[in-house]
Each structure stands twice: as structure tokens, then as C-alpha cells.
Length: 464
Ligand code: 5AD
Ligand code: SF4
Picture 1 (tube, rainbow, N blue to C red):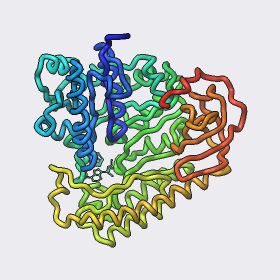
Picture 2: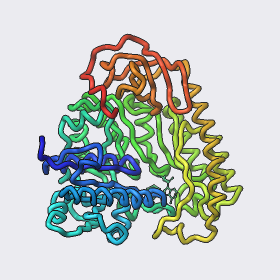
Picture 3: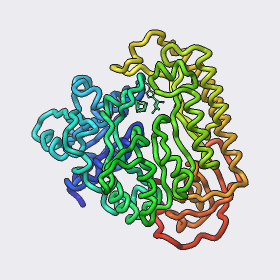
Picture 4: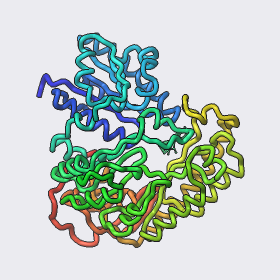
């Protein structure tokens, strides 16, 4: 397809940005754009940005510096390179981006992606365009679905946004401002999307939302459905072998979700449940709306329903006013729960959030020291969890050829990469594997039985 315009989309931050980038690519495909893996030959570069922490936003400005040079070089060759900034930095900074990086042509917030074709048409007429509105129309009704080929190229595991935005207003977090109020998609539309994905070979679906377990989308019966009910419905879609969901808030873990963990085989026994801190004082200052005991109680209830479950979490160290005692409470909570994995961050003041103006901001040194301590502890738990997998048998969904010749890599129920020596025909299938070796981040194993030729294998090179 010579002559087709090319778009390069670079995603930063969370899984929702990955999903949004795909949907932008799908929408632009119907405008004649094809995706390119590098910005070098692109006519349009979109940076899909993240604003959750300081470094994430600063990265965008340095990236924009590099792309500006590419734009100048393209202009020397008589080509016009359009630059768009999407995502949460676009939403939060708006016109400031055009002032700091005048090479940018378009600033588009997360709720306006369905307007991209129109916005780009305005850019082509020479306008610098900013669209950071929260439009009344539902973008999901207007964004285009992926082609079968695009879905297959993206692999056997797919994200589906079921909920967006957040009403929790944790005092450190920009999400309620950049993604807006909580909105759930209707069940029928989610099911239709999952059916299309399954039809193109997807075997695992991760339902995503900033506060996914607050899901309350309208069901076919006209009532608000819970996430637990939605999971049961999606498990009925032929071809879908595995379900996950992320990210959850401890306060919204309700009974139907716990029931899903008890009874729904397709639901993987791995839950990302951010706690942020183990200190009640800090949890209160963060406006997390739950105590340490509430969190431990939720963990106990889910473990009771599904003893095989493992947990991961997010932590913030150095929140304003955090004392040594508060920090030690976080360390002791880590020991008490024993997380299989975790993300941990130094508190970063986000403009416009309440915590940014709180007294008791801590020095960078204190934050760094606490982060190191916490990460060392989390690492020992992760290593212990991985080591405990040796000798166990798991179902593994095989995703792609590994870097090592002859090896195929998939994911365990606990999201650990699992490497086996096997033919590429197992890609796209779930096979039983006995784990023989564990490293800090991944597992190695052997197939329990010779691979069966069921299912349609996906492309071996998907994702490289
Ligand atoms: N500073 C540091 N970490 C943050 N997170 C969100 N906001 C901030 C902030 N201002 C972390 C939280 C959240 C994860 C996605 O990012 O741990 O769960
Ligand atoms: Fe941010 Fe999550 Fe708190 Fe919502 S619940 S404000 S997304 S940290």
C-alpha cells in the first residue's frame, strides 16, 4: 500500500493507554493510516502520555524535543510530520504543551479520541488544535473496532476497557481530574467487543478501568450489573479461556466479585489490589476510605473464597507527613500479606491535587531511602513466591516465541512469564506445565503432555 499515510503511536503509562492507543490506531486505519513501528517514516506521531508521576510528564517533554528535530528534518525533505499529544498530560496541561513545545500540532484529551479524524483535518488546514473537553457523546460509540488482522497481530491476550474515570479522589492522584468521573460501558457492548476478539483468536481478556471493580454498567435487563456478574457473562463467550481485571479499589470488593473468585474457573487467581500504605494515619490523609484492618479483611475474604489466589499491590512512600513509624507499618503490612509482586513509587506532588499543598513534604533523600528499603522487601517476597512455584504444575497460556531459539513463552495464572522448549504450534493454547526453575522475574518449565493441535495458532512473531 504505497502512498498510505503512516502513524506511529507511542504509549506511556498504564494499560488503559495501551488500549486507547489501539483504538486510536483502529480509528485512523479507517482514515487510510497504517501503523508504523518507528517514528522515522511516519506522517503522524502520537504520544499517548501519562501524568501519574512527575517523571512521566517530564519524559514527554524530552521526547517532544527529539521529535521536533525529526519534524525539522522531514520538512527539509519536503514532508510534513504532524505531532499529536494525547493522554493524561494532554488533558492536564492543555495549551501549556503548545507553549512549551510549539512543534506540536494537536493536543487531544482521553475523552476526545473518537474526534481524531476531524481534529486532524483541522490540523491539515494549518490550525494548532486543542481538544480537552469531556464531550457528551460516548467515545466508545464512535471509535472503530480493530480489524481481524490487527487483533491477531496484537496477540492472544487483549485488554478491554469496561470502566473509565474515578470518583475516589485519593489526595495524591490526578486521575479523577484527567480521566473524569466514573463511567461504565453497557454490558452488551462489552460482550460484543469480547466476541469479536475471541473470533480473531484472543484467548485471554483483561477487563480494565481506573476503578474497575466499581463497574456498574447497564445490563441487557436494564439494571446496573456488578463486575462479578459481568465476569460470569464474559466467561460464557466461546474461545475465552482466561479472565483478569485491573485496577481494583479495596472498598469496592463486593460479594459477587468474591463469588467469581470462588466459582469461576476462567478467572485467574491473581489480584492487583493497591493499598498504597500500611499506616491508618497515612491512609486517612490519602483519603483511601479504608483502614489497614479493612484491607487485611478484604484479603482474608478473597483468600477464603479462593485459597490459590496471589496478590500484587501499589505502594507510595514518602507521602506528606509520613513518619518512620508510618513507613514501618507499610513494611509490616507487606510481611503480613506476602505479595507475589508489587509496584512502588516515591510520592510525587501532582499540581492541583490536595496532597501537593499539604504540610510535611519529605525530602528526596528520605523518599529514596524508604523506596529502597521497601523494594528490597518486596523483592524478597516476589523471589520467595516464584521459588515456591518450582515443582508445581500450572496452566500456561502461550503467547509468542521467546528470544531464545526453540523456546516459547506464555503466562502463568500469576502473570509470571513461563518459558518452555516447544513447537510454535502451542502459541494461542493453554497447556499444563511443570515448573522446573525460577528466576527473580520468570519461570522455566516442561510441558506435561505433548501439545495438542487445538485452536488456531497465532502468529509466532507476534510482539517479537
Ligand atoms: N505519586 C506517587 N505515586 C503515585 N501513584 C499515583 N499518584 C501518585 C503520586 N502522586 C501511584 C499509586 C497508584 C499507581 C498507579 O501510581 O500507587 O496506585
Ligand atoms: Fe487515583 Fe486509584 Fe485513588 Fe482513583 S482510586 S483517585 S485512580 S489512586
